[in-house]
Image 1: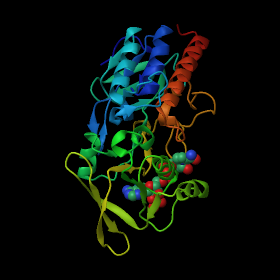
Image 2 (image 1 turned 45 degrees about the vertical axis):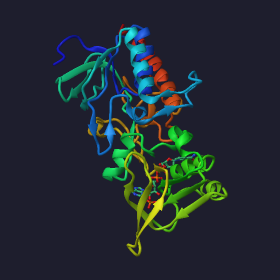
Image 3 (image 1 turned 180 degrees about the vertical axis):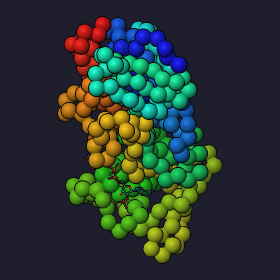
Image 4 (image 1 turned 135 degrees about the vertical axis):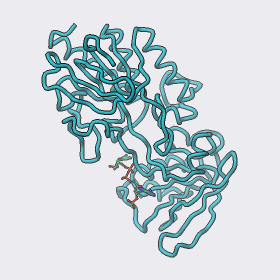
Amino acid sequence: MDTGAPHKLVIIGSGPAGWTAAIYAARAQLQPVVYIGIPKQDPGPVLPGGQLMLTTEVENYPGFPKGITGPEMMHDFQLQAERFGTRVVQDDVVRCEFSPDPVKVPHTLHTAENGIVRAHSVIVATGAVANWIGLENEMRLARSGGGVSACAVCDGALPPFRNQPLAVVGGGDTAMEEATYLTKFGSVVYVIHRRDSLRASKIMQERFLSRPNAKVLWNKRVVDVLGDKVIEAVMLEDTVTSERSRLDVRGLFVAIGHTPATKFLAGSGLELTEKGYLALNRRDSYTNLPGVFAAGDVSDEHYRQAVTAAGMGCVAALDAERWLAAQGVD
Ligand code: NAP
């Protein structure tokens, strides 16, 4: 139980957005407390550090010419935040009671293990979780780096995928974007879609379909992933005839949408978009509630990159700092 004075700033989430917010807030002497979450299976792994904890090599974050692994990067972000006095708590925030006047009556956050914590301002940076098909072998090979991934932009350029047959599951814009990206590396890129028409916008469809090594497998769903240490094939089932077939691939990229981590905000009064993301003003991190800010994938359904999340974390910390100063909290 946190019975002391309210914190100036609590940050919920420990991906690039949360840690960047913490670095800025700590340097601004806001003594931020970061709730990093408790590891769980959901059904895929959800870890403190977020989606980067499931990414092998990060090659597109500026400043790392030789690349860096996702977990190493998150470890370093944390060290940098701690260096300036960030306090780190391994716990989940499970419910929020946001106050209409958080200077007089601080926000109250209920946690899974430590009771309640009170804060004048909060940055929500809980990210989003990639949706998985939910197959046991899919999750096993995703965890072990065995060629199953939910992010082609993160992993697709890695050597094991070069000149190999690759598959993307899904029929939306993300699937098209990932599949188009993969055509640069794979010998052939199959899009496996459960219906006979794509949900993706025409332009994204055409971009993929115009590649010579692009192929769509219609009315198919993946029912198993085969391979011991690395993926060798997927087992497909026709959604019309139920016929099963084997497709040899060396990479499987699941692109069936993301779910923003906003469940714990139910009933809090925070405004969400139609798709469940936190709604923000276009260029800043202000939510509809005073003293509540958001950053990273939880409030970004479009870009979803480590570097954009980090930028949003910086914006949220600056917004929180200025808001606290304007309220006379120092
Ligand atoms: P999405 O539009 O929700 O599409 C998800 C796709 O996955 C759908 O085709 C869906 O099939 C399929 N799917 C869902 N669950 C499945 C399951 N269990 N097994 C097999 N297939 C499954 O998600 P998204 O593609 O990630 O896009 C999200 C939002 O971001 C969209 O608004 C999109 O326009 C936007 N976006 C934009 C860009 C861009 O403009 N550059 C790029 C990426 C994303 P059904 O079609 O049968 O439902």
